[in-house]
Image (cartoon, rainbow, N blue to C red; front, side, top):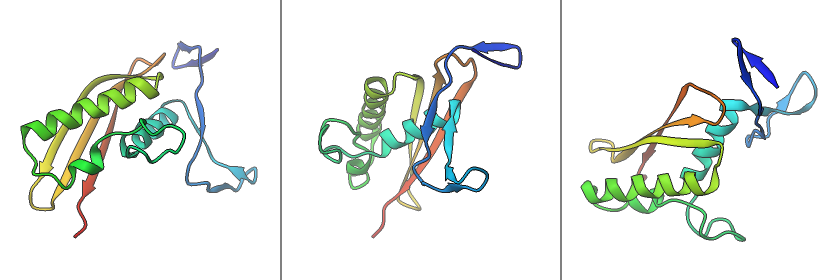
Length: 135
């Protein structure tokens, strides 16, 4: 068990940083822990397209597909549902509170904000993802 600010946390989450940068202090790759590990995992799941993972083609969200659609209320609802589904099915460490999807018309971009709790941590975690179309 770990104590942080007089709160007992029973699980400590560790993931490898996907940038594979070298840690100068121990010559190993960086390790993401706790909230940072879950945030990276959630972001990776959201940005994964269907059929991108060979042995699990159903893992993914409709984010990239929706970049080339005419954005409207239906698109927003589809994206929110897709993001909630991928996180609830593949990331048990995160409990979704809310997903906001907005369009930035000037830059042809989607602004995705995800609010969630990390299991065994009481604070709300927020992830902002900005996706732009490249023409």
